[in-house]
Each structure stands twice: as C-alpha cells, then as structure tokens.
Image 1 (cartoon, rainbow, N blue to C red):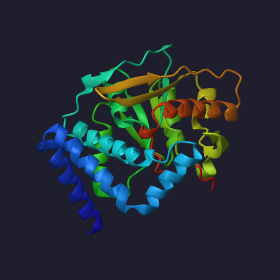
Image 2 (image 1 turned 45 degrees about the vertical axis):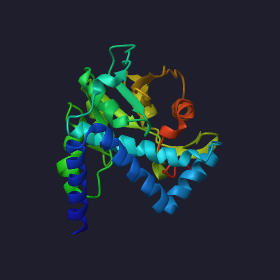
Image 3 (image 1 turned 90 degrees about the horizontal axis):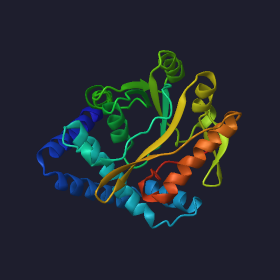
Image 4 (image 1 turned 120 degrees about the vertical axis):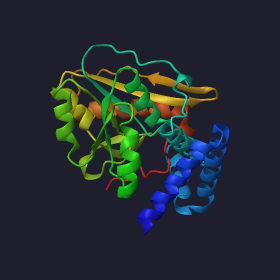
Length: 269
C-alpha cells in the first residue's frame, strides 16, 4: 500500500510539473522544501550540525533545503521535457581522447549535468542506488536517468560493470561525496575525518583514463559548468582520493548552499 501511495504522489508531482507554469513549479517545490525543513527536526538538526562542522554559517541550512527543492523541481521538468538546457553556460573541455571518469557531487544539479554531457556527445554509465520503491524505480527513476543516452548501473556489483565499460572505451560517471562505510578509506573533508570510496583511484590506476571533476552550479540566470583540472601522477590510492575530496570541498565552499548537507557525511562506521 505504501509503495503505491508514494508512486501516486510522485505521479501527481509529475502532473503538476507538466501542467503549471515553470515559475510556479519552482514556487511549489520551494514551499515543499521549506515545509520539510520545519517539520523534519532530526534532518534539520543534522544539516545545521554539518554546516557547523564545516565551519560554515548554520543559517545556510534553510537555503540548502530550498536549493535541493529547486533541484527536485528541475528533475521533474527534465522528465516532462520542460527543462531549458540552453540556460547552461560553459562546456566540458576534454584534455585527451581517453575514456572519461566524470566525478561530481550532490551539488547544484548533478542530474541535469549528466543529461547535458550525454547530449553533448559524452554519454556515460552512471552509478546510482536502487530506490526502495520498485514502482518509482522501474517506471520513473530508471527511464529518467537513461533518457538522453546514459546508462544506469546500480551500486551492487558496480565495480565489475564499470571495469567492463572502461575496457570498451566508454565513459563513466560517479558521485563520491557521500559516506562510504566499510568500503571507504580514511580521508578528510572540510578538515574532518571521513571515509571516501577509492573507486576512482582504483580505476584510474588500472586504465588509461581522463579523470574529470565537473559540476553544474545554479546561478541567478541559469546554470554554469565548473570543470577542475586533475592530475595525480605517482599518487597512491589515499593521496588520489584525498585530492578529489579537496577539489569537491573547494567548489562547495564557493556555493555552500547548493550541497546536500542533510547527509551524515562524517559518519565513520
């Protein structure tokens, strides 16, 4: 019953995003984001604590909820064909013709970034967690993530699949900004200990690839591509992974309200 109710609610939001003027879609979702900020005390407190751990103003918490709400609105606008990709300024600048490992974070609009790159000639195999609601996953999430030519790979057994794609000379995309648990190695993020998956380092050492830290930041008049140079010759897995964390931190510090602070990033277990 719960699964069908959640699916029905999601279908209703899709209908709203298809029917309302785009400006209203944003207002509705920002209102929902603000409502969740006030009613979900546990997650709100985690957001505030995380901002404090990073040495940032905890007053950014409410705005971060609004930014995530905007991202959700934009995801549905992409799904319904109403998202304006022409408002994205900038473009990925390849350094080589090697297969790419695109690295990003839950920052700005990471889903729009993957679709944009696919449209511009860089379709990739993206790794994502399989949703708990099978109806939403099968009928909405999976088709959405693959609608512009990307391929969705679930985290379970992802390494084997990624190795195969790179052997075929294809591109892959990874988000590495969430806690890694037992699969991670000890690193730091905003000066605090955390665990990060070493997947990128492992793959980059095994294959001749181009590692591309890339982000899509929301701006007052649209979006902007942020691409960072990356090179770590002679680095071990820890040094390689730490350098990627440092790049993520650098980008997030410039636009802290656009990162997903609701996640327990510094949980070590």
